[in-house]
Image (cartoon, rainbow, N blue to C red):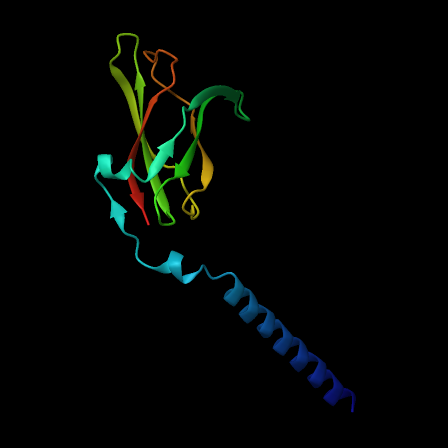
Length: 146
């Protein structure tokens, strides 16, 4: 009798555990719209029609090692008619003579951005060239994906 009760308890615990795993796997799956292959708009002038960029800002902070970090932040707004799944921006840092001293391309969007909505982005730089003039970099849309 005790053996049968132990088998029922262990078996029930296994069934409940497997049920929780299946439930978690089902609920954590991204929606079908995010699993579909992504279409990219690579032409910069066409990509800029999908996104409205505000003027970025540059701030300074320290990392946990005490090193100075420059943080470029801004806001992107989806002005297209479809949700965006990817926005890649291109940043150009200028020198004192107006020349480009550093270029950076980075993903500004990590989750879906529905049409008409806005989201903040942030890029951190630990080392920028000594020739940088400390002004806000030029920011352009490099490509968008939907």
